[in-house]
Length: 153
Image (cartoon, rainbow, N blue to C red):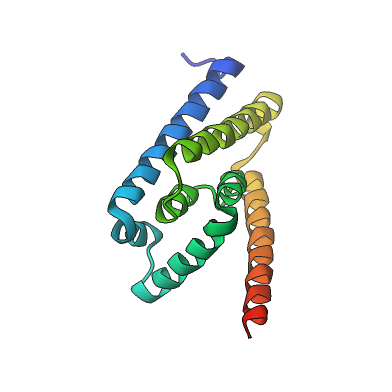
C-alpha cells in the first residue's frame, strides 16, 4: 500500500540522475547519427531543418553553453536541448555537467513543489506556467533574430 510520501534527498538524486542520463543518451545519439536522427526527432522537413541547423550553428558558436543551461531550465524547451546540443556538437563532458546541474535544479524545484503543495498542485497550472515561459522565450528569440536580420541588411 502506498503512503504517497517520498524522502526528499533520494527523490532529488533519483530525478536528477534519471533526467541527466536520458539527456546524455539523447545527446550522444544525436552526436553520433547527426542530422538524420535530429531531423527525425524534431519532425521537420529538410528546408526547415537546414535553416534551424544553420541558425543553431551561428548561435552556439558564440554563446552555446549558456543557451544549453538556460534552455534546460525552461519547461517547454528543455526536452529539445539535448538534440540541439548534439547538432551543435558541443563538448561531451561540459554538456553532461550542464545537464546534471540543470536537472538537479529541476528535481529540487519539482520535489519542493510536491512537498509543500502535494495534491493541490495541478498539471494544468504547471502547464500554464510552462506555456507562458515558452511564449516569453520565443518572443525574445524572435526579437534577437529580427535584430540580427536587420543588421545584415
